[in-house]
Image (cartoon, rainbow, N blue to C red; front, side):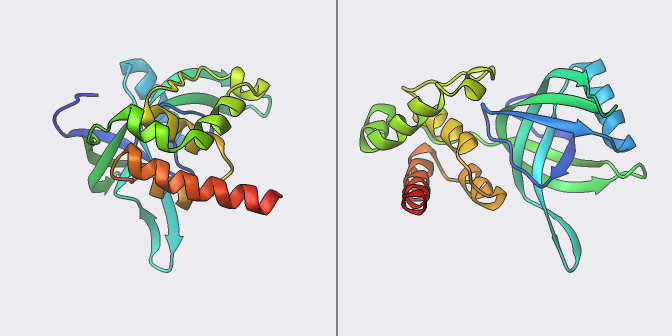
Length: 199
């Protein structure tokens, strides 16, 4: 993805959120998305995943999503195409158009978060690093091609948000956080609530 200017890219609205650095498997069955995936693989380009919510006026797409790249694909036992994508970059989504095929395209611009003092931010949240350190040793997590950098607040915050059991709306608010420091603060509250509910 061109890192400085807006690109016109396909947008895949889903009931889930993929965070930068995290891995997601998807089943593709609609013709419009099969053709989008084939085109992305042929041209070696990615697409954007954004959370879609349904309300009275129909489907509504979030104004921020994640640019993803396809890292693997396979034919699933049910005959559908399975793809594995990796979140690459938080992006803003503007001027969404729907083609006759039903596929959405939009003007996509990368969002670069303000840099934070990693050491200072991470020092405030030793319990979150502890939770992530434990999760990354889980056999299912170990089998994923994740690059978890425990010295980067951005990596810790996105990876932890991608691994804990939270709703898509919570995940979207973590994606839209101003920076890694705000995301870590939000995560601390969420993790606290999860541990209170499970004790």
